[in-house]
Image (tube, rainbow, N blue to C red):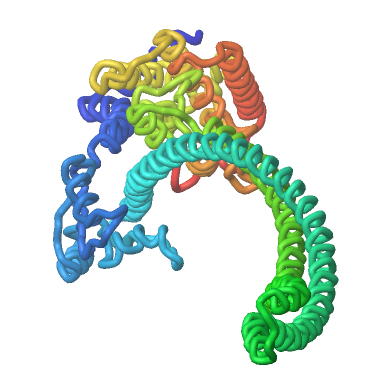
Length: 631
């Protein structure tokens, strides 16, 4: 009997009755129902998170933030309600706990009373983190807790971006204000530098004048000392002069007294001469002298009288001269006394002047030193002001001169400095399409496993008739492989048409599904040929092993070492990888490598099955003579 005949005979057996046909159709639909329903249910769960009920508890009391009264809790709540990423329900703490307990809410998010004040504390001396409380109940749904954690992270990121953006804008505005003030200060420093330059020139002139003044006061001190010495000498001379004048005045006074007496005597003598002549004339007359004789006598006496008068005149002139001399001597004595007194006063004043000039000289030298110190200080201050001006200008130049619009953009970038550029080499259409390679491969194994519940692995009649082991084995593989192909084609139709998954390479994808189903059929055939019903159970164990080692959900690198080693051995991992390459548009070389591994498994399993059929043909076992109760 040839392979087509054996294949046709098995198909006739499977469709010989209505119940067998129904059973066959049901088993053919197993992978379609398993893969299709599961992928339909998980086609886009993240797109339906808006249906997940979540409690939102807002207890924030608000605070002053950046000079403005804010309530970030209310702002966050409004943003979440507008966003609609979840089915938010604003409740109090008691309502949230009740909802978590009875399953009305999958998780609860609480914004505590100090939420805004904690955010505002960043500018205080005691900063602290604001907290968002997440309350979950794994008894409701474990993944909901994981999703809640991700949701809180999103809220945290949103609030952080908002706060940093506002704080960054405030900081940038402050820096811009600082830049403007620095420019103003630099202009002021420039003006100060110019003023200090002029002041320095004036201070230099003042220092030069102070030096000249100090030199002059030194000379003046010398002159004042000489003047004081000269005035002292003059006062001493005037005192001597006054003493001599007083002695002269005393002598002239005595001389005047004598002269006055002499003058008086002379005047009496002169006055007595005429009387004496008259008396003499009378006496002569009385004596009897005649006129001639009297004349002769008088002629002798008259010259004497003339000489007396002349002498009296001279005496009176001398007296007058002596009186003038005495008056002059008195005046000289009085004047010299006054002059001596004035000279003494002048001497005192000269010494006072000398002391004052000496003090002025010391002050002038201090002024000279101070003026030079002032000039030096002003020049240093000028240099410092110039450095200050240059430093302020350099500092202002280092600060950005940005517009308000640019600063707002910078603040936004500061709040979210790192963007994510999604540049996928390959990309799945959605979550369901991402799981499709794994669940299609798993559905293929489950479909073949289910078929072997009603399909005979080999024709025992053919074995008993000593037919060719190769033909018997291939015929035993061909029936489940053909029915598995129907399963895969049906599943591919559900994935592409019913669920709308896109395939970069649809025909290669279908080819991988057909190759995988044929390979699985060969493996389970070999297990059944060698182990019978136990082999069917081993097929179930292999399915479980491949379920966890294929890397269909989490990366296979996360598996424990023994299971990770099985990933490189068992065929389902290669089916998943090949499906991803052809479905998403990956590397064709990897898909060919995976197909080669599957083909190796296929050929190897068929060879093992052929060896098993050969053994059955020429050698009987107790299992052949006494079949197992379970198959």
